[in-house]
Image 1 (cartoon, rainbow, N blue to C red):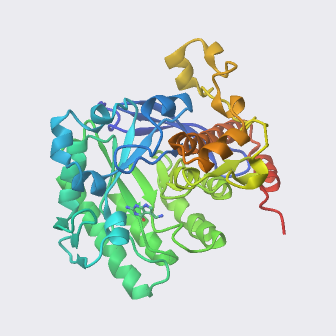
Image 2: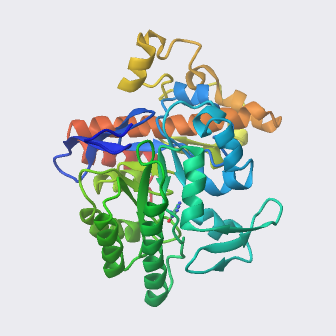
Length: 401
Ligand code: PRF
């Protein structure tokens, strides 16, 4: 909750890693305090696909992400407000961040018309014509009651002309101003701005400087991980991150590859999200410390080794300790599915089209990333992030020719 000193959502800095720009901190929200850097599982339609609130807690989730556009189209933000808000509706009492819907309108809908006022488009569910503006996106997110709301921005292709990117970025800045004016619940919800400008330093600088002048409670870097190379993404982060205030959370949208998570953290990112772990999980690909495992592969048919002996279950993070008290429950034999169940069993579940296969693999991949972030937080505390990076690059197989 906002008090005189702090907005609804605020960043507490704990430690800066000695050899990189990595930050170890906490984000305070009306639904709890969470450790950074963090990864946020994505529940686009108010549900993390295949993973319920109980399991999300068992694997140490902190924030989860949902989407303005999808919940607006179905079941409707007013229905969710009537139900008491998104937290209550989906049975999740920790923090929620909602993306503004701009990214989805630009990626999902045909026949859209973009104007200064907003964007008109046909929704992907029943084809109805809809109009999304910065004000509408705020009204919806105020109705949903998410802890962090993203401004409406235009999601643009990376490789467009300077003129195009400039016009679009400047419009997104004007939309941020309008979002700020339209925001009705500053004591319980925080509006984050989104830095755009593709690969142009001058445009990213103009975007960041203007957003920082608006004194928003947090900032995201958007328009990355959309097809540009990793080298390119790092180049943009290198000149963008120093423009953002050190006393506020910084969020890199749509990133989950382990090497990119480390690269982002090294440059001072605190928050990440991406559909990747659940999307590839439900199709049968596991993310593990030693790279990806395609569980449908025949070689797993008789593999009676654990799904992933490296993954713990109840998260050892301190917030969970507070909540659960005795961490004896942590990793009790028979309870941790990643150590108890075998690759053979998961192979069978996918082969037999059992729902449980998709559920377990999704939960597995989320736990992998959450534990990865826990390990990264420890590495930052110990000023060992570079060594952590070396190990990951080697083990995950990034260094293979
Ligand atoms: N803007 C918004 N959501 C996003 C992005 C963006 O640029 C991205 C880009 N990776 C993912 N999600 N609003």
